[in-house]
Length: 179
Image (tube, rainbow, N blue to C red):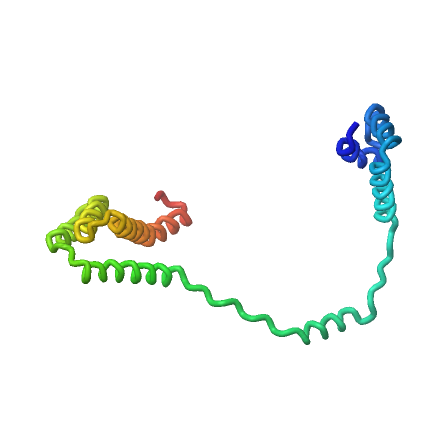
C-alpha cells in the first residue's frame, strides 16, 4: 500500500469504520512507514484536542472595550456614487454619435450615401446597417471603420428597442398578462 492511499484511510481507522481488510492493510503499512505513523499520531492528537471540552472565559467588560475600540477607528468612506443606467446609456449614445458626426463633418462622405443612409434608417434597420457600412467604406476606404460604425448603429437600435419594449414586457409579466 502506498502512503497516499493509506493517508486517505486514516480517518476511517480513527473512527473505526474501515473494513477488516482495509484496517489490516493500513496497519501493515504503518508497521513499515515511519512517516505515515507520525502523521497518524498527529491526527490522534488533533482528535483528542478537538474532543476535549474547553471553557472560554469572557474578558471583563468585553462589549465596552470593543465599542471603545470601534469609536477610535476612522469612519468608513461612503461608496462612490454609481452612474444610473439611463445616464450611462445617454453618455454612450452621445459619445458614439458625436464620433460618427465628427467623421461625417471631417471625413467628407458623399451626400447621396448619407441620403440613402437616412432613408435606410427609416425603411429597415438591417438595410440601414448595411448602408452605414457601405457609406463609411466609400468615404474612408476602410471596411474596418465601416464595421465599427455599423456595430455602433446596431447596438444603438438594440438598446433603444430594449429601452422601449423591456419595461412594457416586464410590467405585463408582473400583472400576469399575455406578452
